[in-house]
Image (tube, rainbow, N blue to C red; front, side, top):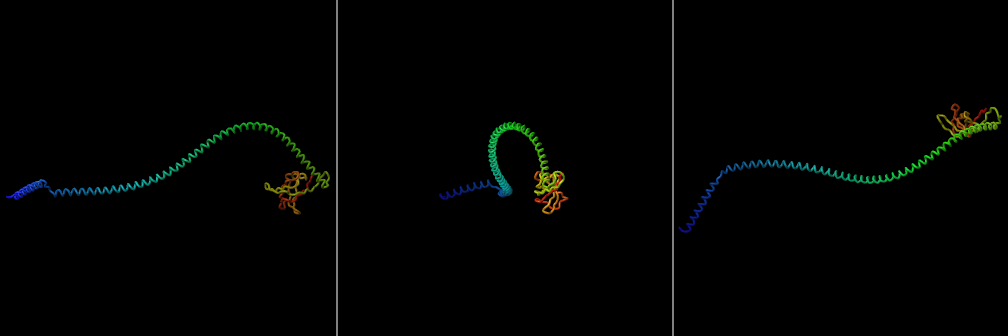
Length: 275
């Protein structure tokens, strides 16, 4: 046998040994692949079922997160609105605070001015009190003088009333004598003088028509006398004298004698019976 045959034989021996070792190893590691497949298939099904459950939980959690996100978004929008409202309220509060501070400053200044004014008024009040005491003393003195003057005035008024009554009597006597002389009547006895005049005003009082005429006590008129009223040649009525003064008198129109509308400017005349 040559060298090549030896090498080839040796190679076959080595290969056989290797194959033997591999065969022994394969035999030692031999498994039941069908059983392994079934086990793996069961594990796969369990894993697939678990995956589906996890997917459902995932989708549920996603929906829950979306709901919570929307709720949070709405809450954030609400909080932003409240924040804007609070910002506006804070701004208004700050403005009101500034206004109150300004008012407080004005009030402090007003209080200071009032205190100064009160001090000044207190001084003026004290001055006025002193003046009042002086005025009261002067008033008491003046009251004493007025009391004395009032007493004198009452005395003078009594004297004046007596003089007026005397004057009225003298005027009546003078009018009587004047009318007698004008009519050519005797100094004593009864006569009927004519006294003409005008109505100077007409008014109403308590439902009665009153007239004021331009003749009075100096013309011989007395309370209770009557005057005839006419306009031209038209007779209008009669009036009774209520009050006389030296140069005028007031009378009341007697309705039972009235025959026309009496007005200012109408003529009056009387024939007085003096005894």
